[in-house]
Each structure stands twice: as C-alpha cells, then as structure tokens.
Amino acid sequence: MTGKSEWLLDAVKAANFPRAASAAREGLHGAFACPLIAGGATLGVIEFFSKRIREPDPRLLETMATLAGLIAHFIERTRAEDELRESEEKLRLLADTIPQLAWMAGPDGRIFWFNRRWYEYTGTTPDQMEGWGWQSVHNPHVLPKVLERWQQSIVSGEPFDMVFPLKGADQQFRPFLTRVSPLRDQEGRIRYWCGTNTDISEKPTPLPRC
Image 1: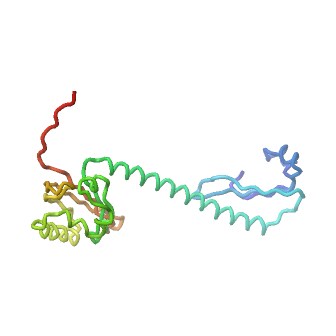
Image 2: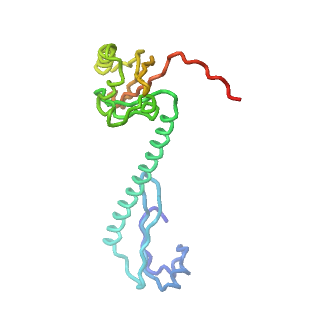
Image 3: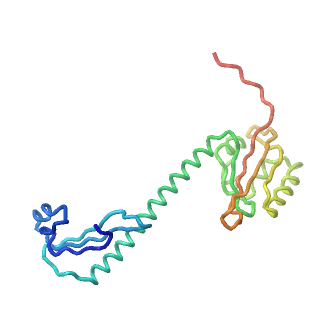
C-alpha cells in the first residue's frame, strides 16, 4: 500500500496484489482498499471485492476512505482506553500493596478513593467513607485542627504535612504521619490531592517463627 486508497480494475491481474491466486479461486475481480490510518501510523487495511470488473468510482472511494478513517480512530481510541485501563489496574494493585493508607481527593478536598489498606485498618466500607465520612475515624478533639490545616492547604495549594491519630477497626487510636501533595495539570491547576497515612506508633517486634 502507498498510504492512500487504491482501486484495482482486476485484482486477479494486478501485479502488486499478493492474494491474486486466492481472488481467482473465489471468482473475485474488482477491488479497492483503504488504509486505516490514525496518528500518522497505519493500523491496517480494509479491502472490498466484487465479482465484476468495475471502473474506478472516485466518489465511492472517497466515501469509503472517510469510513476507514473513522474506523481507524475508533481502533486507536479503543487501544488507548485498553492501555489506560491496564495502567489503572497496575496503579491500583501497587496502591493496594503498599503498607501505608492511601487516598485521593478532588481539588475541593473531597476524598473519592481510598486504597484497600485504609479499609482494612479502619474497618470501614466505601459507603461509610463517602464524601467527608473519613472524619468518623478521627479523634474528635484533634479533628478541628486537622480540618483547619487541611482547609489551609486546599486554599493555598501547598502540601499538607501533619501527625494525628486515626482509629483502627479495634477502636484504638494510633498516630499517623499524614502527607498530602497536589497533582497539577499543565496550567498549574490542581487536579487531585494524593495523600498517605503512615503508622508511626511503636509496635513490639514479632518473635521469629520456628
């Protein structure tokens, strides 16, 4: 292919058609082909055949070339979505295996995602944590200060760094070092806040197993 749509009067006799023998066996003669091009790359070729020898039809060829372009963009978009989905799955796997509690919030500070470790530690469910539900696992005496500091970061766009207790599934509070950083777009606007909570309580060293 030349990168452009091509019309063959008789595919059986075309010197540059690699499947001429197959076309002859099926009684196919008239043919035209349109490349599937997207992003400057050729993704494939779509071919059409007829049992009759037909003179070139520029309007038909143009129409089918447009259709081929739409198909190519659909394939490209589907591939991009598959790649994005795979990347998201890998990121989710990584986030669920780290020892820290992790979460993401929108520009307004509303948390929309927690990793699995968060739910394991707090003993909560996604429905309970929806919106600002995370406040339920904070010490009520310390929460006002946490909210004040968090609001300051949301307004200023500066990272958040603070130590405060979080309640576990056993109803015990343990101190966590919390760090939150903004993720910005090319214009510098905050798209997400990414936060981690690291348990800094002293724990007894487990005895080695025999």
